[in-house]
Amino acid sequence: MKGRVDAERRLLHRVIDEIATNVDLDAVLRATVEVVTEATGGDACFLHLWDPAEERLVLRAATAGFEDVVGRITLRLGEGVAGWVAQHRQVVTIPEDKWADPRYKYIPELRGEEFTSMLSVPVVSRSGSLVGVFNVHSRERRDFSPDDVAFLRMTASLVAAALLAG
Image (cartoon, rainbow, N blue to C red; front, side):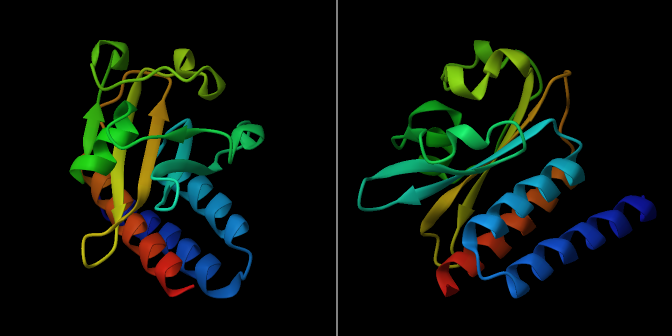
């Protein structure tokens, strides 16, 4: 347990360092999804940010292998798991068979057929305003732990603060 806490602390420091030292927002977001993937043991991570002018979530960062779809995937509030999480500001964990969840929306470019489990966490400001949504996917069946959820919530808070400050 202590080892995991120490590892998560180191990974959170990486996120903080990236936010504090990098002026390139896209680089910060890319580094953050890589850290989230590593910390949670996921196989892919997507960060969708809310665009209030378009009233849509826009994919702004993704783990390696998905760079070509960044900026091209958009979701309305309530659309797909990410849209549902954004609309309700609630965490969703799907340990297996996300296809059976009525909130799930298949997006071919995100290769959902490769993944079984997912964790989706809202990114909100301190005042509760929507900033975006993190989605973590796993190829194997996975019960994301309360520690995974807590880590992703902390990371989401850091990202929200950085985006709103910058």
